[in-house]
Image 1 (cartoon, each protein chain N blue to C red):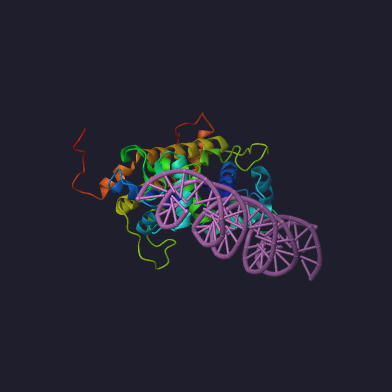
Image 2 (cartoon, rainbow over the protein chains, first blue to last red):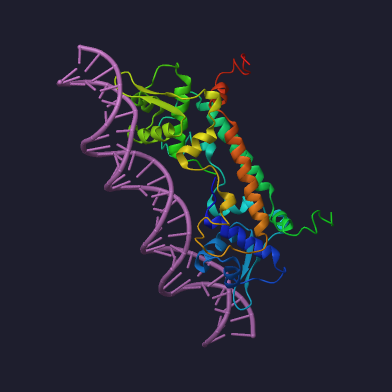
Length: 150
Length: 150
DNA sequence: CAATTCCCGATCAATTTAGTCGGGAATGAA
DNA sequence: TTCATTCCCGACTAAATTGATCGGGAATTG
């Protein structure tokens, strides 16, 4: 289990955006400083997040980035998927991945192993896809533990 | 979520050993062929597993490898830890890892994020440490779903 | 038009991964 | 003792991935 620096930076940036006043774009310079993210690296990341429809951007003076959707609807899993390509791939290890056209490996327990890996993939996916950016921010604010407005 | 080829090979080898008659060493040549594992790579892996006390070896004619403990007591997690170094490190991402002496990053949601990552680490660890080699083999044998001898 | 701000492809160094190579040391049989 | 067998072990390497950096270009606004 590992997460790339790229995904971590992406999550930082989104958290910063989610925590800042809406309808007021934040520039990459600010995101870079607040999140301690290398500026040029951040540019790549924001472009990906834009393609993924997580954020939207505005160019020119007074431009910048803002969330494209409410923080409640953006999950950690979605962010990671967008910047890293996928969340999990254990389930595919024994099939196509790496074995380009090679015969599928066969050894005792192979199908049980495959099933277990898939199970773990699902576990991780459902955790990360179920954890929203809003959830994360709320954990830092003990006051509003449970939402007021339903 | 990813697993290294090294760890996958290690698991294959252990499954093969666990599935073969006990008290009769299996040679690396056999393990290599049965598991489709490059021989010289396998050598490195088996040495690690030996240091980890998962297997024991015997040299000379008629020598080879066998499990050092019952398959029930060997988990996927333990194997991965031994060959890859560790299972999870999400929880450490925001602390020491990578930031050599650098100030701990601070941005909105940082502590919630850390908590969530640690939670996921624990989830993955407990899954992998709880899944034994015997469990995996049993999944391939629908007959003995539940153990006879308790 | 000119400052600002995002957009985008190319390149690069360091690290990790997935092995290979070449021999050495212990063991057991003849 | 000698020899084949089998594990032991360190050094090396090629390819992929990661974590960026660089240099400019395109849109927008005042």
